[in-house]
Image (cartoon, helix red, strand yellow):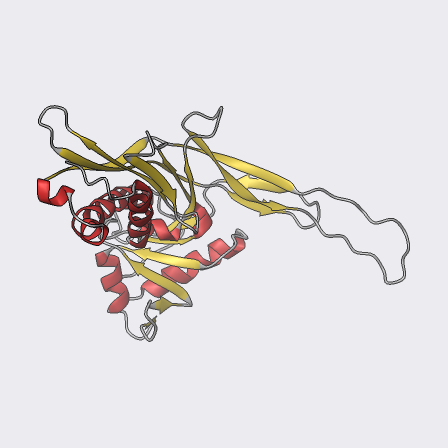
Length: 295
């Protein structure tokens, strides 16, 4: 029998926090998380692009009327195309666990599994990026290529901190390149850019990017009822999930299901003209992929 003393809202809250804490790549990108679909939008989530406007100036003492402008706000659609979920059967003893033990034995593994599926979505985008033909890579001096990629991003006026995502082989090149990598902090850096090693991307992957380069949309399904299911979005808005407890009608065994809908895409970056105040969404300028194999 399912343990009715466990509040599904507590289960959803704990699971959302556990999954979010397990994010690696997904923690590096722009995320929009919610519960339930937006009315009239179907499986599409509109990611907000930062608003912009232009500034004017006038001479000190000038009493002419102010020039009045507006704020340009834009969105970019991302299609939810995957349900990341984990369904496990529970033994009689597992069904009667208290919240602490149930979290450790059941929810934590499920949260990691769902987070892993989401990580895979981001990794696939990074691995699939076209490499920058103008950058030549030398495994003995990878810093040179990274600095060129950084300069390209800044020339494109992309905002925010620049990070380097490296597969295991690319990361090895960085570590063996000498004193170029600063390992004095918890996260190593090269040329001021944080390096994130990740084994979900291909071993040779090397991407220099900002958070706004990739959009990740996460929508938790609506709870089915208040007795056996609940959905929760983390306080920072970075993840949402539904937890459902039920019974398999075929054998009467208790089930635990953790699920969320996911979509990911490369985002256009807003380029702002300070003179005209115009903001144009421009594709492919928020990340630079480097060919590390010569193929």
